[in-house]
Image (cartoon, rainbow, N blue to C red; front, top):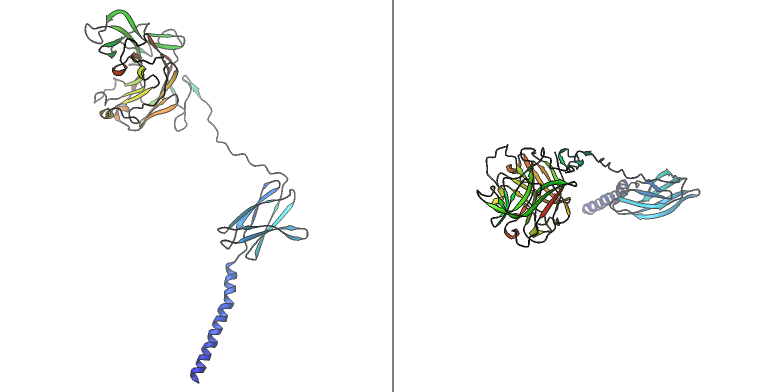
Length: 388
């Protein structure tokens, strides 16, 4: 009997516990529920966006609209990840009250509609105003500031400005079998009609060429000028617009290049001492301008993308613009506005002032002069600008 009574008491206690838990559960569940949030934003004269959050992760939200006779259901949307959003069509110029209901709990939002809604125009980033100086329109650096002109020659006179340029007479160009002497002669170096003309020509008879060797003579002369001991600059932007004579055969070699200023001694010899060939135009490759950076990398020969490039289109017989942008850590060459070669070596060879040179000469190797080469040949320079 005591055993049965004990079992009865235990059963009664268990029932009380179960009933208590059952009574508590709805209270806990109710505590976990809350009314959805609701916001209303007018996006057009006849449209609003209704959005908010729900307590349940995935549930339905009913949207009701307040009318003169009570609440009228407008739409039911599904919430995902506790969020819901929908667009409703409405009429304008009135008070709008909406109610959002989920989990049997509701919340309302009220707004006053306007007859028209004007979308704010996107804010445009102000564009820098063009700036001009002696070199004309000032190009922009990578940081958005403008370069400043430090050297300019438009070749608008009738003679070479010898305060800026020195004709080359100390070197030759071409191969041992066909070489040209650079000479200071108006038939090879002249300024007229807004251009500098540098010409390679064949003579009627050989003339002495002491720059090649004592007692040497040649049938060919070329034209070259440089800013040797007149102007040099370390870093900046160097630009020239050039036309090389149209031809498809070998023999001609035009160049726009920079050379270290010898007033600043170097502890190493060329090529480690440096040279920046912004554009070399070989008539054998008549559709290309070939840049070349001479420095310690020469030990590895031509390396496209590092010290040279073989894909810079620049047809002969057309005007082409060549530019160099040079900083302590970057040497970049452009042909007709297109970046053709970038070098970020920061090599010591490029940490010194350089002079500029413009050259019309003869080629070597596969580009050497032949009987079919077109002479005379003139390289025309429209302008030369330098910025810092």
